[in-house]
Amino acid sequence: MKILTLFCLVFSGFVFAQEPTVITLSDVANHVKKQNYEVLQNAQRVYQARETINFSRRSLMPRLNLWSIATVVIDWRSAIGLVDEIAPFLVPNNWLRVKQSEILYLAKKEQYRALWANEIMNAKILYLNTLRDIDFLETYKEQYNDLKDLVAIVQARQISGEVPAQVLNFLKIRELQFSEDLRVLSNLVFEEKKALAYIMGLPQETSLELPPMQLPSIEELNPIEYDTFIFRAISSSPEVKQYKYIQSALKYLKKEVWFSFLGASSIARGINGGVFDNIPLQDGLGFGAGPSIRIARSESHILTIKENATKEVIKKNLYTLVNKYNSFIVNIDNQNERLNLAVKNYDLLQTQILIGQNVDPLEILESITNLLNVKLALLNYKYDAVASTERLTRIILNGDYVKVDPILDEVLND
Amino acid sequence: MTKIIYAFCFIGLFTSCRYSDDLGELKELQKVNSSILMDDQFELTQENQSRIESYFQFPKEVSYKFETNSSFQNYFHRKFFRYYSTDFCESLVSKFDYDLLLKKCTVNTFFICADDVVYFEQYLSHLYSVLSDQEKQKILEDKNCSDKLSEYGLN
Image (cartoon, rainbow over all chains, first blue to last red; front, side, top):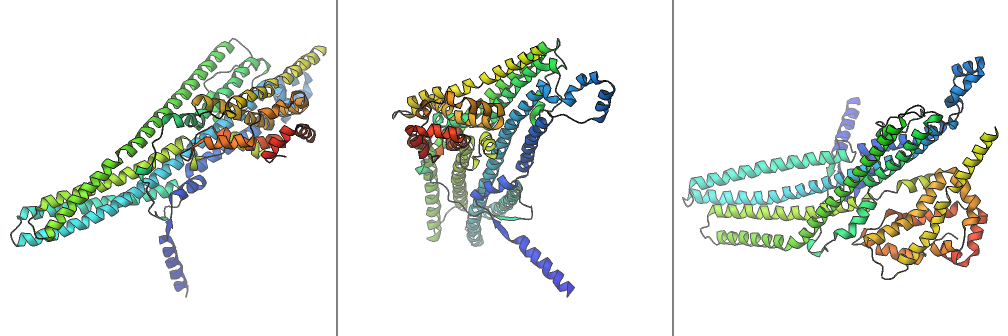
C-alpha cells in the first residue's frame, strides 16, 4: 500500500511538473515586478536605506555608555568631551548627516526605479525574441517539409535517369543541414525559455508556454518625432534624477566641512553614502577645510558631467529608436513585395512540377531557400517593430514602466 | 548665558524666514497658469513642457517638505493666514484645464509630459488634507476656491 501511495505521489509530482505555465507578454511585467531576483534584492537595499534614515534620526538622541558615565561621575567637566554621546543633537553635523541620508534614500529609490524598469524591459524583449524564434522554428519546419518532398521527387527522377546522382546528393546534404538548423533553433528556444523563467523569478522546473501574439500591422503605424518624446525621456529618467539628488546631498556635505568646528559626525550617510567616501573631512575646522571644499566642488563637477553624459545617452538612444521605428514604416512595402515575389516564384515552380515539366531541382531548392529567408526577414521585421515600441515605452517610462514617483511614495506612506 | 540666548534667538529668526521663498512661489505659479494653461493655442514645445513641469512640481515639493520637515510644518501653519490670499485659487489650474492638459499630453497613446502632471491631483489632495479646519474654512470662504476645489472632489 505504501509503495502504491509513493508511486501515486511521485507520478502526480511528475504530472504537475510537466504542466505548462502559459505566459503572455502582459504577464511578464507582473512576474518581474514581484519575483525578479535583482528587483527583490534591490528592494531590500531601498528598505535598508529607509531604515538608515531612522537610524540617523535616532542617533541624535543620547546614548547610554556606562564607561562614559563613570568618567563623568569622577570628573563632571569631562562631560564636555562626551557631547557626541550625551547630546548628539547639539552637533550640527549629525543633523546634516540625517539630511544627507534622507536625500540619498531618494537617490537610491531612483536607482531602484531604473533597475526595475530595465529588468522589465529585458524580460519583455527576451519574451519577444523567444516568441520570434518559436515562429522561426515553425517556418523552418514548413520549408523542411517542402524540401523533403523535393528530395522524394528528385529521388524518383534520379532512378529514371533524368537527374544526375550528384544533384540528389546535394539536395540530401541540404536536407540534413535543415535538420541540423532545426535542432539548433529548438535548443535556442529551450534556452530562451529557461532564461525567461529565471528573469521572471520562476523555478527552473516550470515549463513555459508562450501563446502566439498578434503582430502589429506596420502599414497602419504612424511615424513618430524625436521632439515629441525628448522632454519626457529626460524629465522622467530615474538615471538623471538620481544625480540631482546626489548633488543636493553634496551641498549638505559642504556645510559639514564648515560646521566641523562643532564636532564631526559619526553617523553613516546610508546605503548610497559611499559616493562621498573620497571627500576627506577633518574632525574640527582646520587648514584641511579648503581642500575638502575644493574636492567636494570637483565631485559636484563629476556629478554634472555624469548627468550630462546620461542625458546624451538618452538622446542618442531616442534618436536611434525614432529613426529605426520610422524606417520600419517606410520600408514595409519593400518587405511585402519581396514576400509576394518569393511566393509567386515558388508557386510557379510547383505548378511546373505538377504539369510534368522538366524543372532544375537546384532552382527549386533556391526558391525554397529564398522563400524561407523572406518569411524570416518579415517576421524579424515585425518583432523588431514591437521591440522598438517596447524600448520607446521604457525610455519615456510609460505603460508597464510606470512606477510611482519616490517623493509621492513617501508623502502617501507617511 | 545672555549671549547664548541671543544666539538662539538669532537662529530662530533665521529659520523662520527661510521658508518664505517657498510660499512666495505661489505668486509665480499664477503667471504660469495664465500664460500657458489658459492659452488655447498653446503647444507642447520643450519650453512649455519645462514651464508646465515647474508649475506642477510645486505641490510636490511642498507636500514632501511638509512630510519630512517638522519646522516647515509649524512655519506653514503659523504663517498660513499671512500668506493666504484669494490669488492662490486663481493660480490653481481648474479641473477642466487640467483634464484638457492631460489629453494634450497624450500622443499616440504615449504620455509625454512630466510625471508631476500625472500626480498633481494626489499632491493637491494631500496638501488639502494637511490643512487645519480653520485653514480650510478660510479657503472655502472664497467661492472661486470652493468651486475649484470641489471640482477636484476636495470640498
